[in-house]
Image (cartoon, rainbow over all chains, first blue to last red; front, side, top):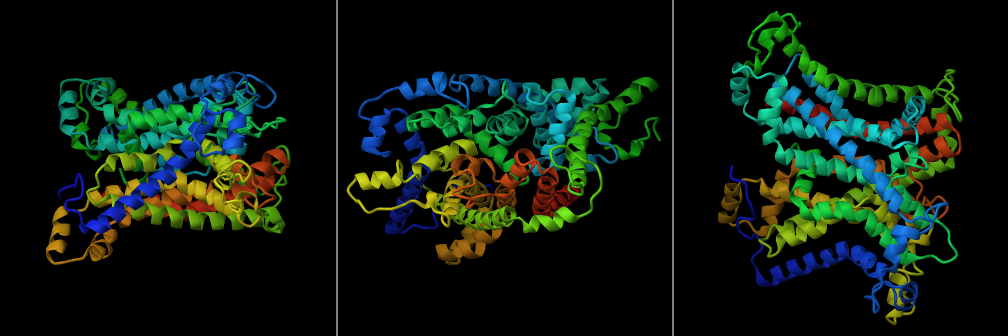
Length: 294
Length: 313
């Protein structure tokens, strides 16, 4: 079976039809780009210019005022310190949560493919369901449990929650990846006396680059973009960025500062956007593994 | 039988441990299970245990705090007397149907168009898919102001001179739900495109060439050969998107916060609001169970299918 890197021959070959195809593609490109354009352009305008010139025209006077305000001084809920504190909160949540869930996923995938035991399929199915459980199902008991552990409203609590519900995906990624890894290599290493961790460390992990990237990007995007867990389990000192952005937009001030809202939205979107643009290939692969049988 | 209780013969030959010393082997036999144990334990409690707990709560009269006195299934009857619940179910049904239909139609259409040896295909793909990297909150903020009549599209078109142009769906009780659809489709249709395109690219070239030699028109080629080959892709897109649709929460919070009135209220918002704001925890738990049954009706067959495929390979 030859996989097609691109269409073998263009099924639509008529010149007029091809022009139409390009036209439709461009129209849709505009649809996808329009909101981003609106956000960027208006974040660089002053409020007066937005009101007078409308939301679609490019700025006549560029100003970074809205960006600085969104980052540093904007009113978010009851405090006026911009988004910077919450940006840091999100970083403090995302970094350990991504590392831990990816590590656990790698270990699980390794056990489930190279150290199989009776009933391992059952455990895999069981872990896999963590990907699908509607979070509404677990909000109440998780809030109680975090309260009991003294973790409600803390960064550590949010890390724990993101790790537990991220394991399903990371295990799926690594399991499918390691399933394709030749068993002969593992066997010969074992005959040479290498144990469980030596085989993982010296043979599998050095060959796991791509799937580590997929797992890290997937987890990073999901956790960075999370809102529900942040709202339910976060507290005043652990409020993640998406929650702060929502508060920023909904904080009633005498004048609605659209430019600050837009700047804040871009600030919040920037990390995942950069990851997507820099390594879109891996991003797509993560999406696919989550969807198509990877 | 080995000392660990795992029959050696059951282990794949690839990793069947070489017996060195009794204790070394015992350790190597238990170690994988020890490594897996924290995840199984964590998921066991945080998914399965919590689901049981929530189900039990739905059978109580818990309000602000869990009250474990059994109260029967009355919540499952009473919830249907709540207008907010009925409204949110109707909303999520409209939303899910349109969201699915539009994502599949746009995704499939764009995938077919991109499959025509398009110059700049990679750039188009990047543009169509990037919204998937944005959070629903960011998506909501962008569309909320973009569709706001006072500042957004309507205002811009009026500034251009078309004074009577009106596009105020987001403030209209009957039409606001469609603005949520527009934003959600914007966010996720690129994903459907990517899955369909990958599906098309995995079809054997020979099949397509043979059909073309036989004189199949482009329309027939897609209708009879390529789209039927995309069945697994359709399944994936459906399941992922239905799963997203029933849980939709952040997007609505950021765009309309359920309004105007209750026009865009969703089950996920109902659950949150009844549990944490109105202190009617049992009703919140009940709504969570009903949502889960809806998702499970779709997802469980998929997981079973995955496991079956897995056993065959």
